[in-house]
Image (tube, rainbow, N blue to C red; front, side, top):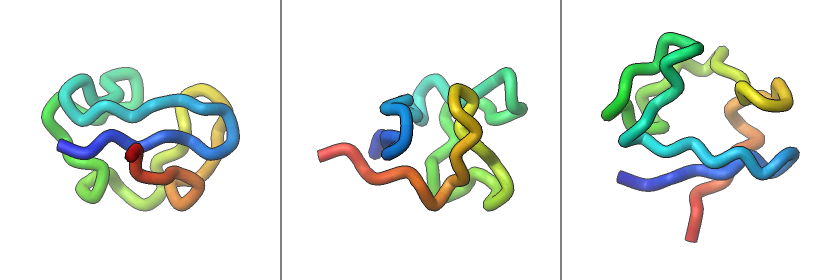
Amino acid sequence: MQKYVCSVCGYEYDPEVGDPDSGIEPGTAFEDIPEDWICPVCGAEKNQFESEE
């Protein structure tokens, strides 16, 4: 699965890990995260993330 990086702070969303503190289970693809999810580090919106090359 594709990883995504916050363009504001550099936080990497890894679908294999998810974001359990925000209720995102491991194995959740970035596309399946709710649109109101924010970066757990800096609070940037989901649209501020870019796919990792």
